[in-house]
Image (cartoon, helix red, strand yellow):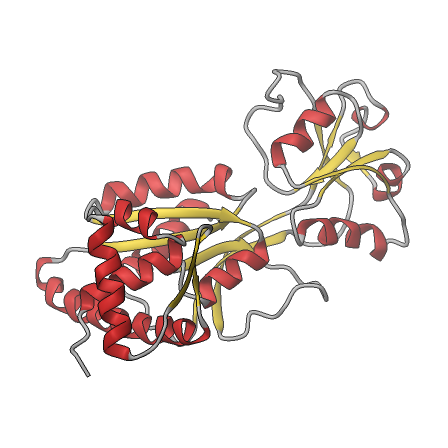
Length: 302
């Protein structure tokens, strides 16, 4: 068998994560032909087909999926070797990709990225925003190094088997309601009062199940008028007077993209807040840049 190089494994991981040779070559700052040649040489060396190639991009074969897992362990080991050597220089470096639940990202991630980048300028940082299940899939398939998402205790949400989580903080749900509406008069709103009004349901999985579960536990059925997976669409519809809503992440300005105001009220329930946690693979030894990012999160987000 011909030798397998680290560069070939790095190109393999990039193409698998980005879905095309073109995107991988841009990220790696090399030519498309260099990436294509490296993949062809790797397939020849291993004696397997790694990708199914089509006009829509590159899709991993079953053999490719197994190769990705092995390649990730090899590269992680090399990262640890490099970092053990760099400890004498007290540097944190390398690449780091974070996945973040879509509604958490714009509220919390910018200040974390700002602080992390200031402290560790030699880390090549990138991030993705997605729904909860997508983040878990990305983590299991090593497309991301860490995931920041909510701690959902729902039957519809799979257990985070093979992963470890660290709680960053908990945020209670609150009510968004139109200015001058029936729910805007008091300081707190009950679920019963909210159930009687048209509801704009934030439905990015599994957020919708979480909010509907609050009503179900109280023996209530909300009057869902609209469903949306967009955090900003929720705020825009409420500001237009089309219903009230529940969210957990708060913005500083209570105005929509159209610069229309809405009102927020505390939700009168005894349930605790929805936990925000950072998740990593249990069997993947964290390199220094991963732990450094977790440490910054705990300082900035808590």
